[in-house]
Image (cartoon, helix red, strand yellow):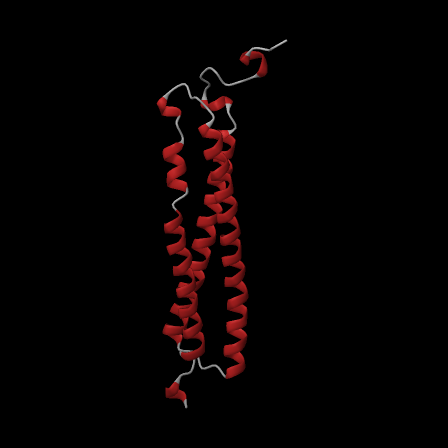
Length: 155
């Protein structure tokens, strides 16, 4: 005995966006985006504060002070970069899941189509540029710690 498509639960009619899993997945994706922005702001604030402090006070550190400051800085920034990398990869997995779910849904209206939203979240080239800027600015801060923390006027 063959069951009809409706009895099998096939999506033969249009459904609303709210009755799909997409809104909850979008919420998680945007929350990851919020955390990514917080982590980026944290690294930017730390970098600007350290470079500004070094350039304005011109501290005179010995080699042990420079190494200690560099190790502390690297531990903070590497932790930050690892979290950014993981959050971004998790966000992209969710975006992929949303894309797959959206392809199988026949939405009630064009306004409920989330493809444009997905495209704005998944701009990979911008995140690669941001991550590269993170690394370049981190190297600049390390340069400032190692080479600009000796005040030749006091020697």
